[in-house]
Length: 74
Image 1: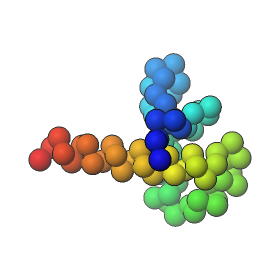
Image 2: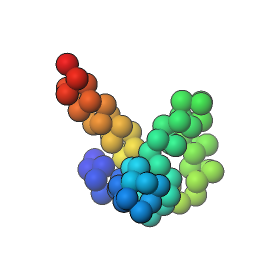
Image 3: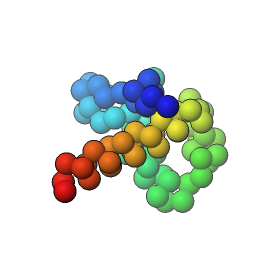
Image 4: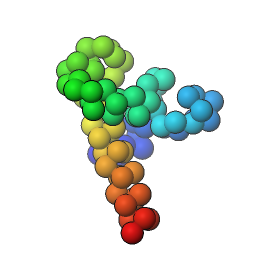
């Protein structure tokens, strides 16, 4: 999965926070919903412009970002 096809950062959208392409939904918001106990189905039902693929991109992006942070802070 190439998350770069689905996650963008545009300084004019949500102050440059990573968002799901074609939306104003931030990666941070989706991760927050998951942390609150929302399921993937809950998210897809409440955000009809999102797809399973866009959620997978959020997961891969988050994993890659965390891995880079850990590597840089050892």
